[in-house]
Image (tube, rainbow, N blue to C red; front, side, top):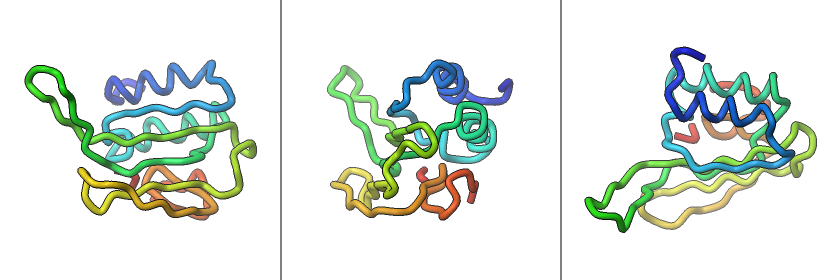
Length: 123
């Protein structure tokens, strides 16, 4: 996991002792480029997890001084086979707006897929 960014490395490390259900907010880099190949196969294959729900990229603001704004995703994971049959995907037409919800048989790091481990974007 040498080429993974800090977030990707921490998600893999934290996934090792993961409870049956976990969720996290992360920068959308974990659903783009080489991060996908480094992070997601490990979570799916090594730890037996699948994506149960996801929020596609949206703007996350801060009231802190300097008003940092980043683009993030929210991803919920569950043990493979333990998650509900329909996976919920929240998409944003406007990254600063409200999401619309759709339901799918499976989700991949890139979005919807009929095979949970397929790597086509949530980003």
